[in-house]
Image (cartoon, rainbow, N blue to C red; front, top):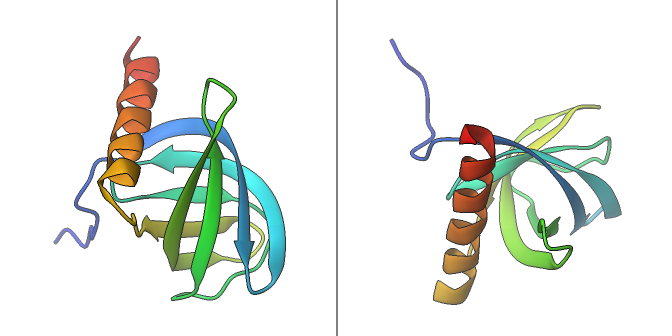
Amino acid sequence: MNNEKRTHERIPTNLSARWHAASGTHEGRVEDLSLGGCFINTQGMVDVGEKVMLLIQLPSGDWLPLRGKVTVYHQLTGFSVSFLPADDKEREAVQRLVATQSQSVEG
């Protein structure tokens, strides 16, 4: 039986990230990415269900601001977050980033 809950394919990546939650501001790396969310490798602590403000550094050097909700937390490893895009502009920015990273993996 497949217990996979994801509805979007995850793409391996390695992007710098900063995130802010109740525990403060932290840094990490986005290890995989999809249209619906990502996994952040970090030692910072979060609670499942907590909302976070996330900045992902784009290949151009610019930062993409996103909101998300923590879905899974692994102590000393990181956490998975589901994106909570505020509008179509944010959704389109995530789509562009996923497309860019997908091409990097394939090419």
